[in-house]
Amino acid sequence: MSDTPDPGNPNGIQIGDIYEDCSFHPVLCTAVDEVAGVVLSGVSLIDGSFPRSCDALHRGPIRIRVEEVMTIKQDLEGYARRRKEELRAGDDI
Figure 1 (cartoon, helix red, strand yellow):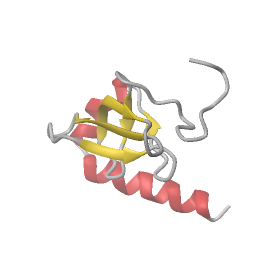
Figure 2 (cartoon, helix red, strand yellow; figure 1 turned 135 degrees about the vertical axis):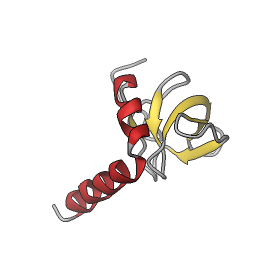
Figure 3 (cartoon, one colour; figure 1 turned 120 degrees about the horizontal axis):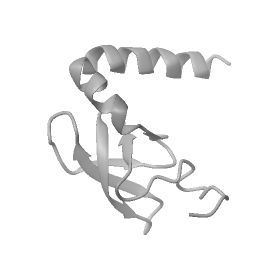
Figure 4 (cartoon, helix red, strand yellow; figure 1 turned 30 degrees about the vertical axis):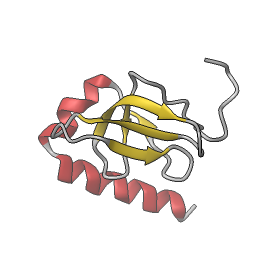
């Protein structure tokens, strides 16, 4: 991976990475489609649902450390609430 971020995938998420999708699920990335932008697809580590797809540029998925997955799984609603607050606070800056 280069040090220069891909403008279509600014967080550089690749197959095998765990990322937070648009519904705040930790997702194991199983595909990166770069045909029409960068669309990440994977499997939810919360409920096993798939494919879970996310636009890497417009939705801003972030990487999640594997150590955080079990904590998120124990309280997905609380995690989602905290993340929404963080995102709103970031919009106010």
